[in-house]
Amino acid sequence: MRLVLFGPPGAGKGTQAKYLATHYGLAHLSTGDMFRAAIKEGTPVGKEAKSFMDAGKLVPDTVVCGIAGEGIEKAGLDQFILDGFPRTIPQAEWLDAFLAESQADNYVVISLKVDTELIVERLSNRRMNKITGEIYHLTYNPPPIDLPAEVLLHRSDDQPEAIRERLAVYEADTAPLEAYFKGKNRLKEVNGVGEIEEIFDRIKAMLG
Ligand code: AP5
Ligand code: MG
Image (cartoon, rainbow, N blue to C red; front, top):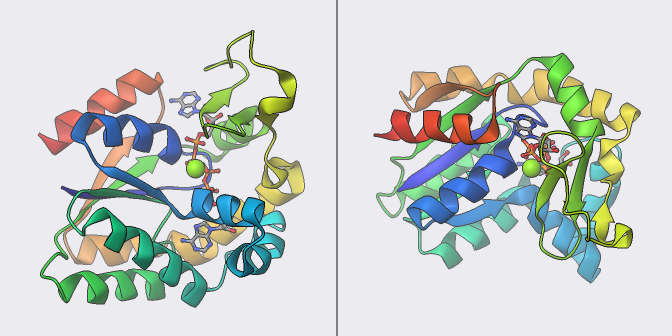
């Protein structure tokens, strides 16, 4: 099974990708998580990505495609879920060409639909476990009370200004991909509003 989770920042891609990866036995490949790991390790890719990410801008396509391609190859090309990649038309064209080389370009794109107001509320209240990558929301999915505060990360791009920039970048560079995927008959839209488990059930029902 090859899946792509698509949607604006805060749509719930990471949250649903974790559930889907466990349920279907897929490698969860999040380019955002890969960059955050690279920044923590201080690698050249991490150093290049950091300023773009902190400002809410997209990391250049060549850097992203390189890191995504490595992840897909490691996963073995047929059991993966991509979270947050591709998010520009050149990235999608690159992915199609890359997978086509191995006759593996028959993936399904799950597009999570969520309104902007809800997105801002979700992102401002998101926290992540620095060690495990677990995603929390202070109200809807609160971290365990015994988790030490220093383990909880408030992402630097979850500040109001960076959130606004990410949403603008999404509209300008990423939203046009919906038409691209539709044209290739890959796009499946799922309502991303509701309880986390309920949305997971919707996706499973859609996948059949
Ligand atoms: P990335 O880490 O991918 O960030 P993003 O796309 O902005 O998406 P988020 O991770 O913010 O949101 P999400 O959809 O995963 O939502 P989540 O499940 O956490 O990328 C970060 C940066 O890296 C980019 O800005 C860019 O610089 C760079 N980058 C990465 N990929 C790139 C690419 N392909 N090209 C170029 N640059 C790239 O949920 C959000 C919150 O809502 C959480 O608190 C969660 O608990 C809560 N929540 C989730 N579902 C529900 C629900 N149903 N009800 C209530 N709350 C919910
Ligand atoms: Mg995410």
